[in-house]
View 1 (spheres, rainbow, N blue to C red):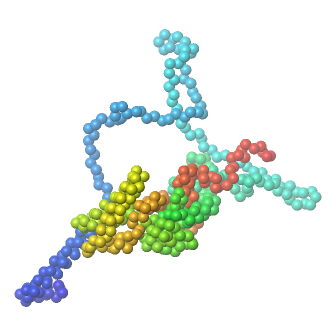
View 2: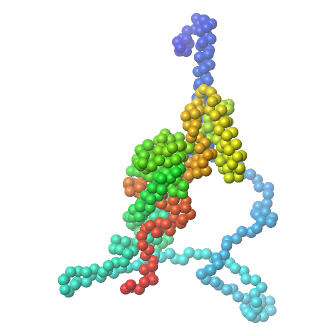
View 3: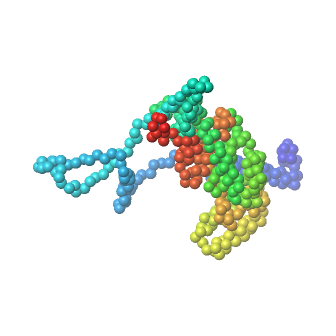
Length: 458
């Protein structure tokens, strides 16, 4: 319409045609300005799922410090705590007076100043050798072989503490196999090949597999289950690392799919009471009676809408309401039951009022989402065991993101599955206040060090 009209001169147009042309041009200019403004709106971690590390950081000018450096007056001095039973004590006695040369060895000290120096001894692996005797029976002529004790089997080359150390360095501290070999050689005086390190990690994955499945069963039968996923690289192909969290357990799973089939495979025939997740459709359809949508994600989405449409009051009011609801849930223990319920009722009514608002343009997708998922927004206000967000799942996946950035792609299926099993067991141990290293040592098999205390022919 606009192109056809422009071809004609203004003298040929009637008054009505000019009015239509001006209106169409005005609408077109508004659309272009809106698109241009949307492009100028930067994407940050506050208005999207972008990580904070990718946010633009401007150079800050150094401020002049007018105040005095150091601790303030009256600040108690902080010192390193002394060990009660040191391994060695060195006594610096006073023998003679430096002025009059009188012998002071028999004098009672006025004060003893204690200082301690901590040092690591030379790390050297302990080697236990087995010599398995073979004897030819004089009666039947068969060869009889001595039986090795449990823990010193013929297939074992490393003890559980050494295997747990290598596994923790690779899994928890993201040390690659090449660097791991150099580290073991330089610090632990341990000759180790890359193939040996790979075999250790592979064996660790098999050792923790049974414990990981037990944890998965606990999560599967949990009343409140949270889930999230992040992409991973396996064989140079995009896979997905899923995490399912319930109470003090978390279960990790490496799958080539991001769809509902992963949740269905994990949950089997179980059904949770509440499922906590973001707005990814497969998670919203998870087998649960109710679903709690992560409000932290919604606050970010609303922040993005506010930056794009600063005059839209609905977005600001909805964001403020979500924040008020989260704050109320955090203050539940400090309030009376009656006062808390009164505040919940106020928030519920305000939410219903906001969902009745009508507007057009950008932001209607959020309005439609909240109308459709009205019953999934404020479940955490009625149940103390339901969080308002799925930050527990986000934190559970954070080490995996670091591992992916440092290590890159998994080169085998077993490597990806081993990482998931180790993450399940070690992270669950940390959640329950256990020592993750000691937990792994226990699962790696029979201890070897007690054999050092036994005689050669025990």
